Amino acid sequence: MSLIRRHHAHLAPLDGRPSFSPGAVVDPTRKGRLSIVVPAKDEAENLPRLVAEVVEVFRPMVGRVDRRHRLDAFEVVVVDDGSTDRTAQVLRRLAGTYPELRPVFLANNVGQSAATAAGFWAARGHWIGLLDADLQNPPSDLAALWEALPGFDAALGWRRTREDVWTRRVISRLANLVRNAVLGQSIRDTGCSIRIFPREVALRLPMFRGAHRFFGPLLIREGCRIVQKPVGHRPRFYGKSHYHFGSRSVRVVVDLLGVAWLLGRPIRFEVVSPPRIGGRSSEARVAAGREAFR
Image 1 (cartoon, rainbow, N blue to C red):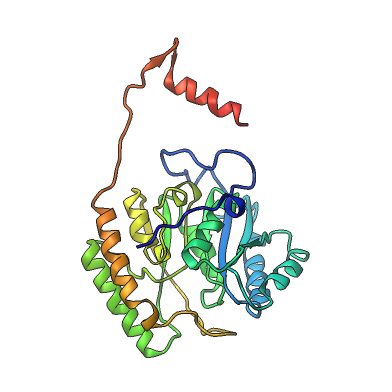
Image 2 (cartoon, rainbow, N blue to C red; image 1 turned 135 degrees about the horizontal axis):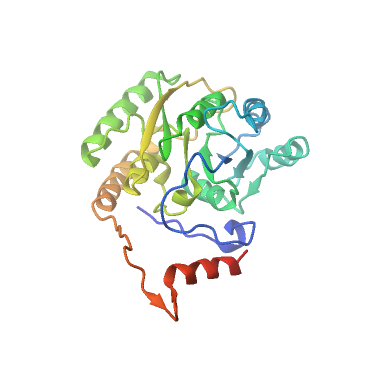
């Protein structure tokens, strides 16, 4: 399990303000800005349809007061993970058409987990929504997860049916059974990429190569209340999968043991009586310090 280190030249926050403050997760009734993060590697053919579908789904939701969960704004952060096709050119062209699109270009290919982490740092919303670039997860299902958030800290999708070859479906079912047995959890589909959770929590997650397969268990480790909703799964429109069983089987087993170790060693604390420092409570000093960054 190799840790991911942030390279400040490429992944620094864009607005110059503190990235997060540890504490309670964001109240879904108070925060309504969503950053949809999409890691992309050689997905030039899929991106025009993906961005168009996301915008078509989410634009009508913005500012609607009749929605169960109000959406104030959204952005689409597509992270080009060192693609060798025309992904970068396509993203630059689409950014001129869709103001919601904010491409992030990585210097070289770093893998899905690191590209996703880059999206976390670039995101400006209070919430992170995750989608794959291959169009197999309909963006409309991400909107359904958004509506399911009130009362919970994170929403995870699980695929009713998988439009993959039968071997991948069987392996996925077995992997979910093994993960849940080892971790003592009941996540229905840890391999499903479509999820929503607070950016504040995303930046606290321990990131390593392969972490994207364990976001559900890691969110539970952070104390998140999880809701799981069924989502659709479509055949790939263009291109081919970047993964196959032989390329990751041993690595996933090693990562699973590492995650089990992490889950058994969480650190949690609650300050019940802040000390007074220099005539002011530490809470007042923290508040004053935060104002200095505004």
